[in-house]
Image 1 (cartoon, helix red, strand yellow):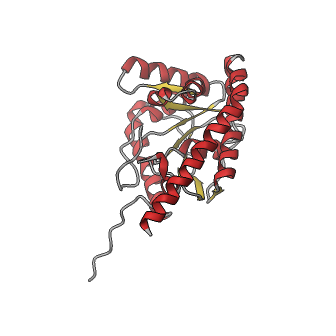
Image 2 (cartoon, helix red, strand yellow):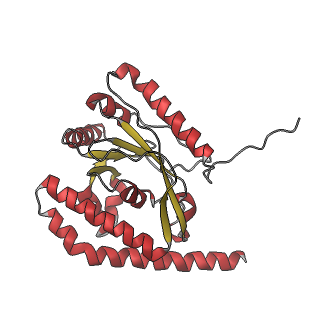
Image 3 (spheres, helix red, strand yellow):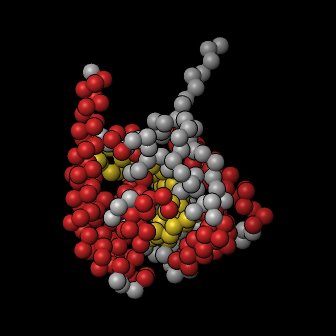
Length: 260
């Protein structure tokens, strides 16, 4: 039975990879068109293409997106969206969850090494190399620029995949510093099932099923200073952890109550 399950996942994942590549190649002329537009307009158009890409990929692979609760963001406002990070599906999930606002993603430089996709990724994200202080500062300036033009930003404050059995890894300060600097609200969104649908361990773990997103209440940064940084970060981390436990996120190792 285990062998059959492994074979099924491998075969389905291979199908998913073909779908991913076929969609990318089919949409490539539109991506190229967006690259030659003015920066802001071209970026907005590129994200529209990516949302269509995510919709088509989900439909063709049996991934069922649904909102599982929470208050949707105000379409007229810019936010600093943050989420947990547990799977390669987190960005497609973001495309589906945040679809009525212009947004830019803070992305990892490692992803640019993937042929063709890496070039699209480079054009569509604000890249950060966490090992390079000057590059981190440049990324922050870009994100602040977009926020001040009423374009939201999306950041995974864990920085990389959470490979523990805890709800979250330790948060970096960046998203919270930007919130204080720009006085913009932070809006967390949780992805509850992407770990089950496509494990961070392997791209050959894809399987169909539900993919739930939950928005948490926004947290205002108005009036906060850098002296409030740790308190702001800890407050939101605690809220997200509590919600992940409430929704029984599958990667969390729950301890059994000790009998009296």
